[in-house]
Structure formats: C-alpha cells, structure tokens
Length: 139
Image (cartoon, rainbow, N blue to C red):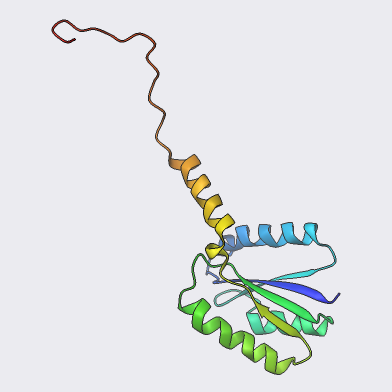
C-alpha cells in the first residue's frame, strides 16, 4: 500500500465527538480499499499526527495526504499543522507528505453545510391562499 490519507481533527475529551470523523474515515476506506486511511488528532485523543504518520510510514506508505477536518484555517491549521507535517518529513524523508486545505474551505463542503442548515432551520413556506378573504372595510 503506497498511498494514505490522514484525516486530522482537533480532538475532544468526549469520545462520542469523534463519531462523525470515524464515519468519514469509514466512507473513505470503503471507497478506496487500497488506500490506508487513518484518523489523527491534535489533542485529547489518539493517535496524534506524528504517531499516525509513523505508523503509515512503517506500513510502507510512500505518499501521505493530511486532510485537516477543520471548518477554517485558524491557528492550528496555519501554524501547528505545518510544523507537525515538517516533523514527519524529517523523520520519514522517503515519504511524500502533502498537506490539503482545511475541509471547511472547500466549496462543495460549504455548499453542503448551507443545504443542511437550510433543511434544519428553514422557515415554513407561507400558506398558499387560493381565494383572498375580503374583510368589511378593506379592499
């Protein structure tokens, strides 16, 4: 197996928080069974990014794409993540490490979030009145 994807998320103290990220990983694994897919977390959960990267390098992966599952490119994505990826490059120079943009900055994701928000919160459509009601004193 030469290609791999690390889905990189923030992490949380509550293990249930990782459920949606595990679902994303399972979907990717089903879509591309020949690609190693690993979750990694910045804090609170395991594995962290260096451990996940080390494991994939040990499995013989030669090209690893790190996909930040963050809605935007805040400090963790702009500062912390490139430093972590650089550490992996130095530890495993024969592996090609690629860093993707934050998932929330991809147009299809923002569009899907807008559609989901609309489905969850859209006001009810106004009723259609076939025949207007005429009240006395009003035209």
